[in-house]
Length: 236
Image 1 (cartoon, rainbow, N blue to C red):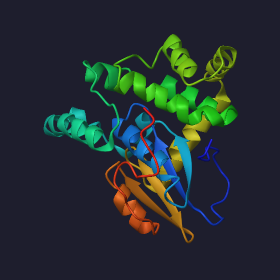
Image 2 (tube, rainbow, N blue to C red; image 1 turned 180 degrees about the horizontal axis):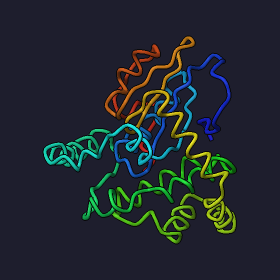
Image 3 (cartoon, helix red, strand yellow; image 1 turned 135 degrees about the horizontal axis):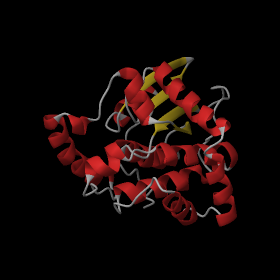
């Protein structure tokens, strides 16, 4: 896998480190994720995927989903469509937004992704993408075991291995890892997702949202070349 996905480790080396803390329940996380995947070969960066739990971040910071504030929710529904078109990501709003996103949540999916991150990091990117595709492109469930296993299969994870990882989601090790990553995002100042953290010259810079990538590039000394730089193409 081209991007580093293992938590921990230092921030030394010639490449600047950019971490993306994300949750597959967040559509803006998907947009930021895909664009950064394209840019990891254009910018001199080491991209680290950091699966975390958005519900925990919202609770700890007293934040609430934009959709729960009427005017913000109305704006967000329009904004997501514009952003998806601009970033060339096949994002579609679920028919039952509140039910699929707010009520069901993503805890089981993020625990599975965490298990993947801990034991099979080479599958972290495709498994995350397939779960985003389910909820945000095909309006399918991401909470039930069979749904998660289907996504894992689509990502190329062998069935027996996927079953083993699913069983790991109930262990203290996986639960504590997800909690620790979420706390790490909070310590950087995150209050929502995606939370992007750039490490430059010994300093950490937090950016919130998928519409701050041009500014992130400026801070790390790289040039923004639009949502699909010439050397890359969308993977969906």
